Figure: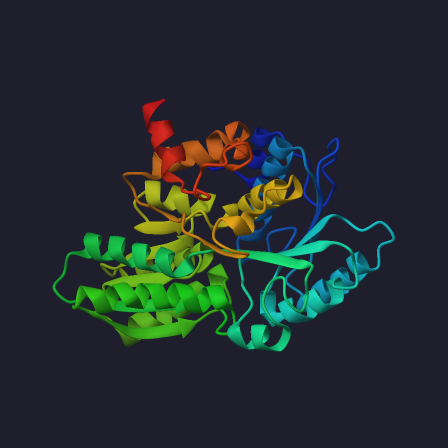
Length: 367
């Protein structure tokens, strides 16, 4: 598998550079307040990939998309929300993320605009919802939320790692993210749920990290020295997993390492026999949100299919056996991804959204 940069992926998909509006004729106008970094600074490509797939979806759905990066600075993100709220010509929709618990304040700020708001990836916490209510209540322009089922992703990842180690009682080290970030907690909960249901093995320590390669490597060294009999390390993103993998290789330990994300570097590592697996596809949440807004904009309310708060169960565990097909479907054929096929427009009898990735991967295998 050849190493691909994000720029190459963007060129293959035929999309415009992130940060620039994608102009279309007559489609919904969407602003995405992206909490991530516009260039790589060690925390991985996740948020840039979210933007890239959103751009592919915008093109397929004839929508206008503007992406504004906050560079992992939640104070800047709040200022960006203020700027969007004050625009004389408001967009139709604003997509935000509850990064570093800034979602409540952003929703309140954006309530001054006529734009309708969708929260993705990091949902509001129960405490935040007690303060401002739920979708379409106290803040009627907050029309919905769409998040990955991160607990199911963590569960499936641990299930795969247990399958690979095949020892009577695995000792598990977990490296999750910010303790105040909902996705970080949910991924850990899902992994622990599988361990509990398996009835064997245990988590010897769950450490919180900063999502970076360097932090994963440093914590991997410390935790492997503390628990030399560990058989599994899992991490809440691929950057930390790849860092932990380096610590495993340095120690020469027979430890299976799993990540979360399905980033190109992680896929390359799996293909080369490095990482054991990754729970992949989180970066598609923005593209799926674009599908939901497209339908809403054309009179087909996504809330009719599961309510205004949607938890999407589509994450796909990639291992060495499936990595080539997944890479082919999501990256090498990125320009062939037609997100319009997920839309419910014109299909009134369909029960709900089916954002599963198996169809993409299986289609690649049979092509």
